[in-house]
Length: 119
Image (cartoon, rainbow, N blue to C red):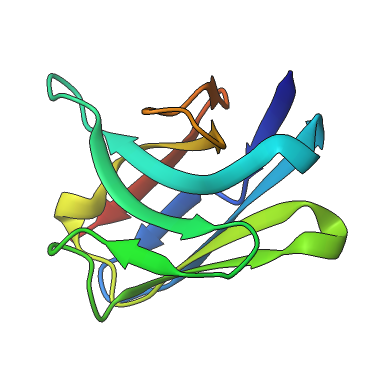
């Protein structure tokens, strides 16, 4: 199993920046990729960004391209989401997720961290 703990959420004004962190522990050697999702009130959980654990290949939702950057520190078993030029519509609970190699989806999830962007 993999345990994921997010941190770094908070309240920020539009145009500001935040950096989220996700610390992984447990069977991290089996992780193929890690991702960030977000869920706004009354909405479905949406994909934000993902990164492969070994090669660092990344992918982004169109809504955050050019503003958010996902990165990982293998030595610290930590994934980051740098969020710049934040907009009120970025307000959501942000979740970290881990995908095992060979899995078709994300197998483990963190508890989430709230990001609120004021206008």
